[in-house]
Image (tube, rainbow, N blue to C red; front, side):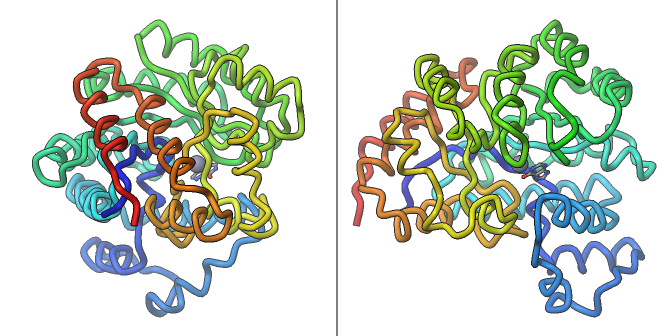
Amino acid sequence: MFLPKAELHLHIEGTLEPELAFELAARNGVTLPYADTDALREAYRFEDLQSFLNLYYELMAVLRTERDFEDLANAYLARAAAQGVRHAEIFFDPQAHTSRGLDIGTVVEGLWRALGNSEANHGVSTRLILCFLRDESAESALATLDAAKPYLDRITGVGLDSAEVGHPPVKFRAVYEAAAALGLRRVAHAGEEGPPEYITEALDVLGVERVDHGLRCVEDPALVERLVRDRVPLTLCPLSNVRLRTVDTLADHPLPAMLDAGLMCTVNSDDPAYFGGYAGDNFDAVRATLGLTDERLRELARNSFLASFLEDDEELRARYLAEVEAHTFR
Ligand code: HPA
Ligand code: ZN
């Protein structure tokens, strides 16, 4: 039995497995510049965040219809459920699709066909988080939020992703203010490749409630103290950090030291099709390589539900937390 957990850092476009990419390419008459799935997998050797993003955006060309987004989300939910994920707060990147001529409604409605039935079909509750691409303009982010207005009953919050360095959180002050005024929850990627100052800025300027990655906080003791004091959740993605060379090897990952420091860490998969594992695989890897005790693993699972946006269903959160406490490790 997998430890029950919530996944809080998951890009739905990053769950596109090579087999599904080729299936959708055939269905939509799109030609991929790879001979087959093996050749595509050969391209999964990344130098850094940007080299990954180049492939991530390239493969999105196969996503064209509501059914494509539905199939993508159902494939993820089935795999996540099989690894103990009970609740998933799922990122999507509308600008990566509207820039290719798709309507944002195609994306949201397609994802919702899967997410809206996920508790019944997969036993996984879900929330949807709209991410702005930080290497696009602030105006484009505002236009995206505006285009999302007809779908806000399906969207819980906003996030910020894509190329981090050179695109500080302050660039998106206006759109985060507008999102807050609409009652949306706020998160942002910060401190993955960018400096600790971006984490501080995401908290102070964007008012984020969780920090995605946040890894580089360890370089600033005063920031760590603040994150501990305010119990700010960090959505760490260990296998992603190895594949994108944010850490040299998994054995070098600061997760154990971060937990010892009292940081509210969670473990997530980020882009599991590209980084070698889903949520349970990330838990297994940190257990095997970093020697986390069963109680540390239970803490990570507990944190994931405490940090989730389940304020609209505290009964469900309590049920999940009871599942975590009842779990027996083998
Ligand atoms: N970082 C930034 N942007 C992203 C990521 C990530 O890990 N995955 C998908 N978009
Ligand atoms: Zn991410």
